[in-house]
Image (cartoon, rainbow, N blue to C red; front, side, top):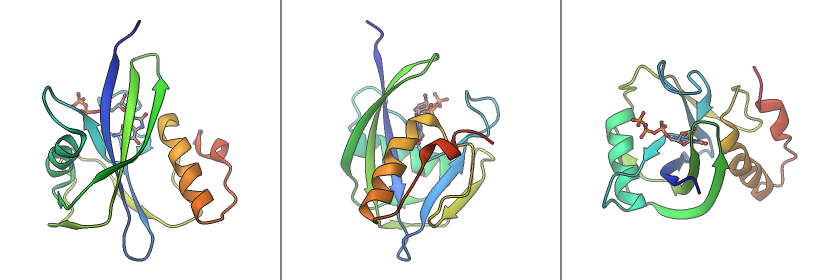
Length: 142
Ligand SMILES: Nc1nc2c([nH]c(=O)n2[C@@H]2O[C@H](COP(=O)(O)OP(=O)(O)OP(=O)(O)O)[C@@H](O)[C@H]2O)c(=O)[nH]1
């Protein structure tokens, strides 16, 4: 069996309900695709620790408490990933894109695209919570 790559992902939700999406940097697989910020767990790290480290390293903020909300899996050609989704509503520090990514606060409907396929189920749940109609398919392509 292919081993799972464990990934911690942050759903940062601003007071006005906007969600933070970031673009994948050049040189990574799926470069230019929009995603929620996060990254792979290192040995011995909890999901919360990995998320705190990744968000510090990649976007320059320090997050408050983060608990896992959902866990999803996605089978990419490059990896079989298990995504641990954490909702984050408290953070400090100024956003600074340290990997030359772009960031974008998104209200509904989400307008950036393409979005990483592994992030689509979570967007669907978030839309459902708000009672919004949402077709993830339109976010798959440019
Ligand atoms: N950060 C993030 N990763 C996601 C999302 N959805 C999704 O399928 N993934 C997958 O999870 C994996 C995350 O790995 P990554 O390459 O971003 O992590 P990293 O920054 O630790 O990578 P590195 O080893 O290049 O430093 C990728 O395979 C990516 O395709 C998402 O919304 N956010």
